[in-house]
Structures are given as C-alpha cells and as structure tokens.
Image 1 (cartoon, each protein chain N blue to C red):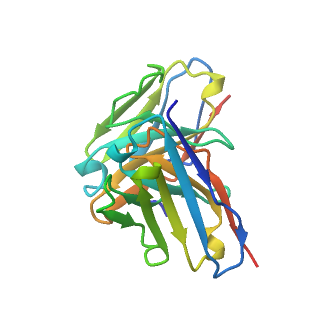
Image 2 (cartoon, rainbow over the protein chains, first blue to last red):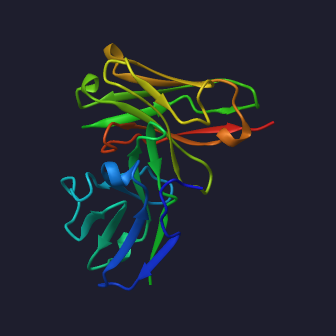
Length: 110
Length: 114
C-alpha cells in the first residue's frame, strides 16, 4: 500500500488531454512539493515535473503539474503515442522522514 | 555528460550480503544528496535511503533500517549501498539517483533466492 495514492491506469486517444491524480496528506504533499516521474518499460525513471509545477529543460510543455491542498495532478495535453508509459508521483514525507512514491499509473494511448 | 553508473548487483541466497556502487560523472558530486531507489519485479518505485552531501545525515525506509547502510566517498564521486541480511523480498532493480531525482543510473539487478 503506497503512501501516495494514484489511479493504477489511465487512457486517452491521440490529441486528448489526460490527467493523473496523486493523493497524499499534510505530512507529504500538503506540507511540501510533489514531483512526477515518467518510466518506460525496462528503463530508468525520468524527472518530468518538480516542485509541483516546474518542468526540467527538455520536457515538452504538453506536460504540466499542479497542486491543491494534499493532492497533486499531472496533465498531459495533445496526447501522443510515445507518452504511453508509467507515471509516478513522489514527495518528501515528514512523518517517515523519507521520500514516498505513489503506486504508479500506467497510461495507455488508445 | 551528467551520468550515474551502478554496479554490484548479483544473485545471492537469503541472508547474504551485497555491496552496490554508483559512480557519478559530469557534475559536482559533493554538492548533492544521493539516493537509492528500488523497483521490485512488476512493481512500483520504493525509496530506500539517502545521504547528505557531506555524509553527515542518512535516512532509511523502515524495511531496510538496520540491514542496509548508505555511504559515500566524495573523493571517488561514489555512493554505496551495503546490504546485509538480504531477503527474498529485496529482489529488484536498484537505482541510484541524484537529489531532486533529475539524474538516475541505469539500475543494477539484485536477485535473492535459494
């Protein structure tokens, strides 16, 4: 059972906008930042969003992040087939003095 | 090029030990926290441990506290994970990552099985 809660799956058609949620608590997302990672099968994760809504250089602006209270969201607009991957949220948790991940969301592009 | 390269993964029996290494290049290693993250087969990501820039602070997830030890050698641009008392459930791909999760290694596979 992950500390951060994500839907196990999401889907959309090319060109659509999809959102992935990440629900936490005051000890993690509510008191700090949420980051988002993208992972393709058999490869290492890649940082997609940091500090709630910041994109590292090289990440397309189709990817955006937001936070409200104890929940974060990742939005992907103009969905493309190459966006099909697993997406994870991660945040620092004061109650465990460590980083906590969501269980991951498998995004399927139909 | 900014890079992390892990090594040391292997197959061991329950109760055994392994030492993972991660060598950094392309950035000022001594200016960053370093992490170890695990991914069990078919499962999600799990943070295991992190260590401060100068090694003065270390944190562990409960499931490895007392069995795993994170350390670093800034002169060698390296971070290590000493794993003792390995269990079947420790099987997985082990990644090192730079603080902030912006840089990841390729991962090294640890298999614990009798």
